[in-house]
Image (cartoon, rainbow, N blue to C red):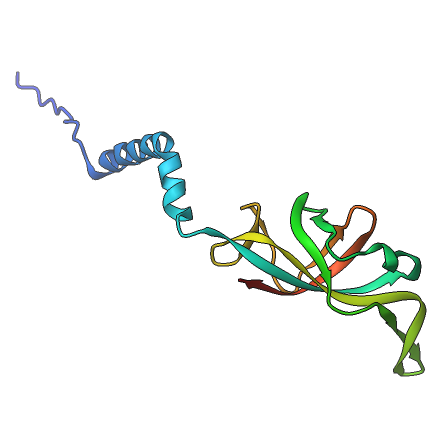
Length: 161
């Protein structure tokens, strides 16, 4: 009697090779993670910068507490930005009121607005990173404090010196 027994031969195929390659790459990534991170972050440099902003509304009684040279802290990021310089004196804020189908611009008696600059340092790497992790750019509204006064600032420009 002749029996036809077919034995299935196990072969090493391309899928097995890819699985082994992926596992090896993952192991190497864990071992050399700090070198891989530095490869992507080597282009970054910490430089002096100026962050320009506008504060649209702040109560009249608090404007005198915002002084030049005060340390400014970005509250949401819990990061120190630098030193404040007021570029304009506080002037009455704009208030828009709706009258019929039109908007009327009036000046506020209760709040003031001013523009300023924060001189500090940040990491320049395709943008502006405070403390290396928190991105800041023109158009952002951030909440800052000078230690005694908290206000919202609309970032108008970030310039590296």
